[in-house]
Image (cartoon, rainbow, N blue to C red):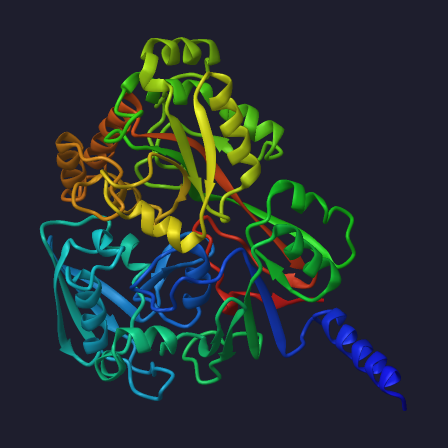
Length: 499
């Protein structure tokens, strides 16, 4: 055989390998993500592409079922000892992927680690009401909170249990590179920029995963995620917009899946930096953005416009909250009134995880009222770092999405608006007091009243412009049974191949 013939045969084999459809029931299940996970240590960073992966490697104390109810996971039962103490009974048959037993000591360690100021977890503000975690036996742990904490269980659905012994031995950095959990899938490898591979944990205590091997691939380009599904080289793709989902209409291989989520889209306006230290220009932005027009014209009418930093999927949602109405003429007048302050160049910071069609539409709408807005695209890790610099040093203007995956206002609002958190957008002592009050009472009506006041304050001062409740869009192989949920979790062991 000539060298040319050999090359042609080799090329044909490579093409066949890359074009072979991912078959239902095959050993390998492929998920295309919009970006690479920034971490696999569940207590270091928190963003969708990381969460999609590590949620399957680790177990949580409690979880939400597909109907949204909080149900047992590592904890089989819990009871209040007082308004500030809750006792959890744990499963006694759980082992980590290295074969060691999961005990109350690991649960206590996980809580102390994420609440440790020196560890500096971006999630700390969601758990810092817990002031003590005490193992009482191998299968009992007592949590003590700083006052009553009504959102405790809603927050604990996100608390991944990590092995104390492993982290003590290898340290934080090595653990991130090779995480050890107790979940339905165990970590296999992480090829940076390409894929994370996990293997089914055949010794899992709960519902076993249906797929022997799963690849989470980083595929930033949405069109490529669509093409991969259509070619059969992937089984599930996340982060697809309405135009991309429409391409699956009538398709033989692929189906679109959507769900209204607790995630919301919003604009961050930094009131500590020019030009948005001028309240007229914050109002001008709010009046310049045509939320419903974007939803109808770009998003196929599925998203829901909002005027508060919650969605109807959260406890704490308040009916009747309104912000400045869409009024481009008034926006132009406000820009004119601001004079020289409005003439500066304004970078609109964004990242690939956000729908760039929406970014471009908002840029144009702001330009139409006289603001000089340019799009500043950065990678997702850089975007997260910038938005965690605190209220003074965070971007002048950014477009982002927010979700606490807890469906409770405490998780959604405390990290964004309470002084001292790394994600805080603006510091306001009145809002601090309301947030503290709402997380310290067990009376739902009192909590709702506090959150309403927060929504009203935010709508009046405009450190943010809430845009819409987002729809999570997925493309899936037709035989895949997968129910998207408001908290956007990809639980592999809740998926199935069906005929």
